[in-house]
Length: 429
Image (cartoon, rainbow, N blue to C red; front, side, top):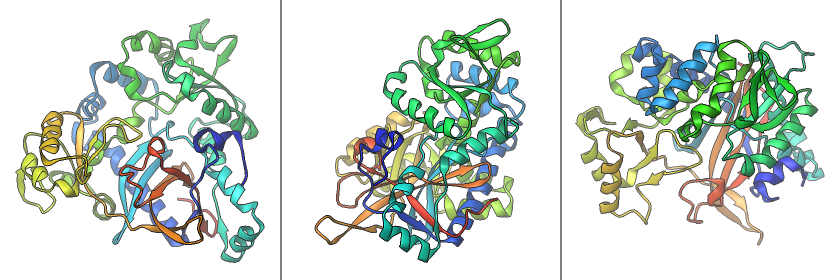
């Protein structure tokens, strides 16, 4: 198996037992559907809030400090929309169904390293050639997206600060270092740091003795709730407002990847705002998703009722999720054997009118994976479909045995990274 510093960081050398495969038509359909869905998400502030980004942020559950930072950074950046994202999906009997759609610069990862390693096996390499299998070099597409959205010339070499939050920096340092090295292979000059290391002086933003042209944002909106966030952010926000530096991607971009934004798409009272094409994609791709509210809502069957009563009656078919956290934090599947009806009701009441959503359960179809004993075993796969400015950007899947007791496929809970191949050349939107 191909080995690299980058893959070792998150896999510790353990990958899913086999890659996943998409047909050319599946890739074309997913790319088209996710492009349409992303466009609908990007229209939400104008459709629902008259373009008021602060109102959109409040509806997403953002707090005052976060909203202020979003407003300041968005006012300083002419275009806040990005083609970079990762949709996390299950495949059920009806096709692919969306759980989350993460937007912006924090999606991370390059499964291209794993694909290159698999192709180093002569037997698989012959199989791939016979079947016309391809993979996307996600790192190359990431760099291409940065260059495109920052308006960089092909030979431009801006100085990029790959910037984390101070509290995350020790844990993420190895990843940041590996990413910097990977980008250098693709012609980008980048340096890892945390936001507290950036200084503003002489009309520039600096990292030690290096003037910075672009800040690549690795920190997230949830980090902005720290007590010292205002002081940490001020050099960057001031430099953005005065045009002394650029940022990839904007803080605003993360709002569109919120689970609360998916609930806005799913809300049946909003259907008249979307085009027929958007409604077709929403209906096929997005399970019923609702903000957790004490008010009455339009339920999945089109009737109006109490969300609490509905959720209590249908516990086995619903999952409770924080709208703004990531990595499976705070997610509670109603069907978990650990969640009694009493505990489920208590959790719902605690989440009521807060930044939480309920989503209909997706019954994923297991995939068969090889077992060390020579047999096969059913696994559940979260398909991580990466989108870049040029379209389909590869796959970053998470996989675990169906009988392994992992109810939320998260790397920290024991799920394994899985790579993926597709038939034919990469489609471009």
